Amino acid sequence: MRFRHPDGSIVHLAYCTNVHPAEDLEGVIAQLDGCSALVRKELGVPVLGVGLWLANTLADRLANSSVALNRLRRALDRNNLEVVTLNGFPYAGFHDRVVGKKVYSPDWTEPARLRYTLDLVEVLAELLPADASYGSISTLPLAWRTPWDRTRDAAARDAFNRLELRLAKTHETTGRRIRVAIEPEPGCILEMIPQAADWLTPYAAQSLVGLCLDTCHLAVQFEQPTEAFSTLQRAGVEVVKSQVSAALHIPDPEDPTARELLNEFAEPKFLHQTREYGGPGIDDLDMLDQLSGHASWRVHFHVPVHAAPRPPLTSTTDVLDESLEHLVGGAHPLTHHLESETYTWSVLPNAPQNQQELAEGIAGELAWLRDRLVGLGLEEIK
Image (cartoon, rainbow, N blue to C red):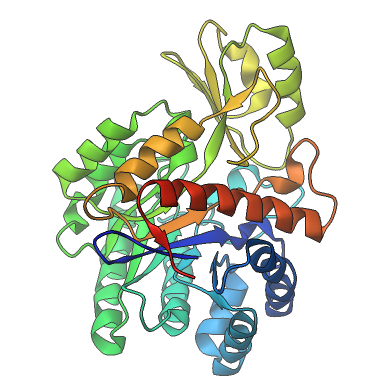
C-alpha cells in the first residue's frame, strides 16, 4: 500500500511475511499466491506491500540464481505485490516448534550473519521498484545480551563497517540505495533507543545503516516516543524503517482475571520478554514470580493492532499512535517504510484456523493502520 505524504513523498505500508512458515522458494511463492493475494483482495488495493522474510538458504539461492529470482519476481508481479523492505532478523527456523533465543543466531559476531545480510542486499536491489527512493533490511540488535565483551563488540563493528562499504558500492554500481536497520529488542545488546543511537552514531553521515523502530519493543521497555525520537535526532541517526506493532499490556497484574487471561499467552514457541514499570524485567512468561506485580507489565507479544485483547488486558496502541505522529505526521516523514509485523497469529488465543481467516486478520490490521495514516494527513494512492 502506498500513501502520499503532504510533502509529496511516498510512504510505503507492508505486512511482514515472517508470519508464514515456508523457507524454500516453492513455499514462499505458494504464500504469495495464497495468503498475500487474499490480503490484497480483502483490502481492495491495486498494490500490496509485502515485507519479505527469506530464510538464509533461500536468500543464498536467490542471490546466486537469476532463474530463481525471476520465478519470485513473476509471483510478485502476477499478484500485484511490491517489495521495498526485507526482514533480515530471523536467519532460519522461525516457525520451529520452539524458537526462543535461537532467533538471535547467528549474531553479528559471526561471519554467517554478514553473508546472509549481503545476500539480502543483492536480492532487494533486484526486486526494488524503480520508483522507490530506497530499500530497507531490518536486522537484529547485534546479539542477545550474553555473552558479550569488547572483543565481540569489535567483531560486530568490523562486520557493520564492511556492510556499509558494500551498501555504498551497491548504490554506486546499481543505482539502488539499500539501507540496513538495526532493530532494538528487549534482552539484547541494543535494547533501548539511547543504546542503539550511541552505537549507530558512526554510520549517521552516510545514513546507509540506521534504526528499525519496532513500536512493540519501544512500548515493552516503557520508553516514551517523544524522548526516543529526540534522542535519535540529537545523534543524527535516521529511522530507516518502522515496524508498527503493539505489545500486550497488563494495567494491574494483581487482578486475578488479568493473570488468568495472561496465562493464555504463555506459549513455548517465541520468547516473551516482560517488563514491569519502574522495576525489573524477565526473559519469558514462565518467570513472572520474579516480578512484584505492584506496577503495570508489558509483554513482548505482538498482538493485532486492530483487535484489543480481552479486558482487563489491553495493548499499547497508544504508543503506536504517538509514534506514528512522529514518524509520518510532521512536515516530512522520518521514514518512508512502515511494516505491520504481527508474526504471532498462530500462537494467539483463538488463533486463525485457516488461510482465509489469517488473511482477514492481516487485512484488518492494515486497514486499521491505513485509517491512522489518512487521519495524519496522508493520501492513499489507489
